[in-house]
Length: 190
Image (cartoon, rainbow, N blue to C red):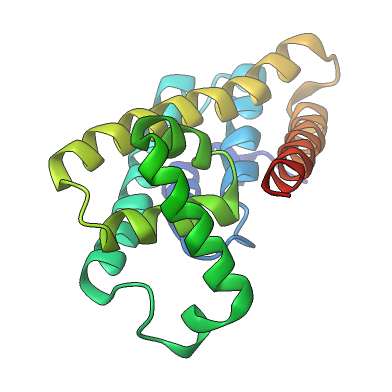
């Protein structure tokens, strides 16, 4: 695996597109891209860590805002997939959480892929004030980007072996954190 592609001028663009796409399709590896570039930044100095964080934060906020816009425009019942029992259950869960505390749930949902999608769609459908929503989701996205990039940067700083080792281990740790968060969120929902 060559790090030239990851440290080249397109690395931040590709990462940003993955993060944006992750807002809609949870199988897109947005978190992994941010963690990998954070590790590469720490190990090699390029791209700059601040650029990874800023680009990831902007892309995450834009993706979440796009989901909000879909929820605001389309609602949560227009398409057949939105009316399936599993999706209805997720949307109902999101609606109850938003009623209980918008800021807390937007910040928390940023770290849980399926919850993030449901929360942002419901936030739009619920007509949460756009300025308030955008402020909260931007802060949540920046915090998420800082966290994801920092995981990679810290692992790269602690592990010998250069950028390739740092990227691989950082991705494994990020996947482990994701699995733990998914497990906890499933247990909390039950």
